[in-house]
Length: 162
Image 1 (cartoon, helix red, strand yellow):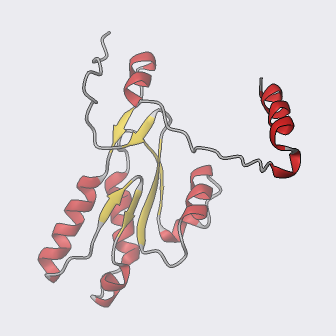
Image 2 (cartoon, helix red, strand yellow):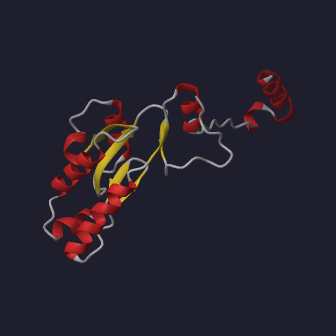
Image 3 (spheres, rainbow, N blue to C red):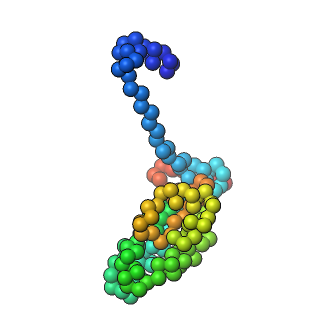
């Protein structure tokens, strides 16, 4: 079918007037609720509660907002402000790692100190994603059939039954 289209296009406009451009889409992960219904594993995971807790504790002590946030596997913050207030970014990163350890759906995590030494495929992807000067505290990789999202079931999604 594509050949027929290109042959007709060449006849109509001529090969010297054709520019072919290929594009791609990054795709989308399957709904984790469907995977859970089929396999019994999968779901939506979020570590926002850890970011909120860390931010509140530091804000109460230092009376400033350090912008600690979590989104799509990454904890980020105003690292320069943390350092200016004498807060050890390494210690904070390690505390985030400890709080996230064992969470359902989290496969592995990295701090700025551990990311470079890991050969894990998730570490490789994070190294390709994070800018060297970007202020981040911890980066995580979800297990298969899990996605970073607030843990709630989409409307009209059936519950898994046994």
